[in-house]
Image 1 (cartoon, rainbow, N blue to C red):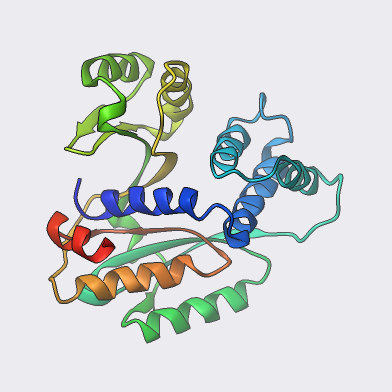
Image 2: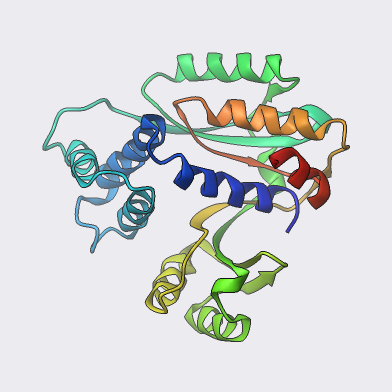
Length: 249
């Protein structure tokens, strides 16, 4: 699971470690507001909202912040109106990028992303030029020492999962998007500790990155993620475990 999957797990781990940062809460607040706007403020009737609320609680987001975000989504409180969008681009070493945003000003967001990409050796690309390299999947990652593979596999598959991928650190359950919530609920009922759980974009075409370009790629991804409007960044890079661990250190 080298490359993008390991990097994505690291991002989620850092999110929990940096949970006191207001920027993390602000991004989660936007997601909660949008989910409540689109599907209602009752998490029992809105699985998307329930999932985001679970993530917010795991990051120790205050309950009042969560409830206020829901109220902004349902119209009980005034708030900024956000739009979702996905932008495509390329980075050092020829990697491909899909950047998911929630913004109240697309012109500002596009300008910011162009600047970040240019400074870090990347560029924006036309819509559709990158999308074909990715497919949407549900991903639930569980630390290897927190679950028994056979038990996890049987529970996940019985609930509708496609596969369980393992390495030395993680067990990664993959599902079709429509089956994600059923699998999530089934594994949560077992009391398992998730490293991350989300419907995300998985690359179908990978790009191996040289040791020289690897730090440039990770800097670009960090700079993009640091933008207030950016919710997620998907990429198809492959970096060796050794280099990735050295750069993380």
